[in-house]
Length: 430
Image (cartoon, rainbow, N blue to C red; front, side, top):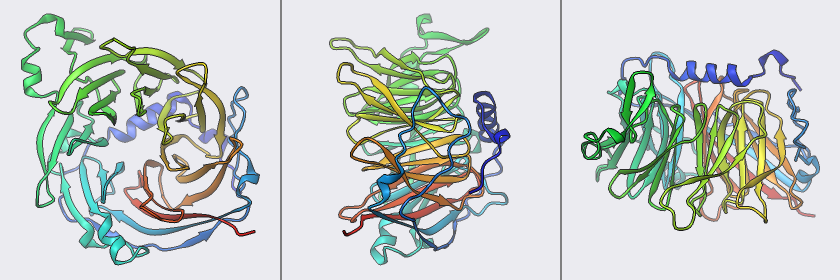
């Protein structure tokens, strides 16, 4: 197996710089030409034990959770169904993917394309995505918004986070087109606060902004119980109410850019930052504002991605140190404690996504790894999905109904392609 060069390792400073450089490239002229499709089908069946190359930069204080014996009774196969690429002079990176019901949202730089997943699956579960499954492309004419960093859904609205410090709110029309409703903070929210000096904060020397405004790129969105949580390179966490789109709170969350946010069903908020820390926020009983309840420090470089399992009891964090740390809730505390690390990627972890009992990880090494937890708390890497020509920046996945262990995985790369995979995991008969 090919071993990655040590010099390709991404340190916290170089990773943060490289990521920022990639994502702040000037946008080209908007191109609203319909999206083209290419089908690329291949099937791979994993051997009984999938060995993965260990990261050359290790964390001695964090033991590995990998147990290569866990996959002996599993049959794993994966199939590349399709590759979606915008028709543009040069491929712009896929910066964000999100699934909402039967719809797939894929952000290519500043433009967001929407596809109908159901149309494909009803005709044939193994068929490739056709041009007829493309429903809409929006925000394509306004390249001044910068790259789209995140997409979230709440109360029938679509929320998109942008590099120009704004969060935009969209509504899908009866014709399945997306109409811009407003941007956050709203004009009404600004007018209600601009007159009072106490509503302004210093964002840099000799420059002030309303505290409800982000001062740098909005990098992540999370939704829970009618609230929208946004994080930014301005080091802040902001909380918005979806019903009236009003900003309720703003917290200085970290000492450096905030790259990721995740929220559990009980309202606990996790933020990951370039300062190598994960911070845990919650609203104490009887209080109106969120407070810091824990700081999780084990990563050796910038934290790029966070994901929670279905019940919120396990947190996964991915970093430029090439490791995925697994944090579990302690019985004696309300926050997480690290239990171990998953190693195998050759470069920085850029994206994480949890679906059912599977964890997906995307990396700057251009691969997607699929992990599964065993009964004893160990993890095995079930498959490695290869095909992207550049780093994998975004992931999404869905398990549709009674799929018998079949998961549809979507991966977006800086090569400008969004790939669609079918992954099947089943137990071998004894």
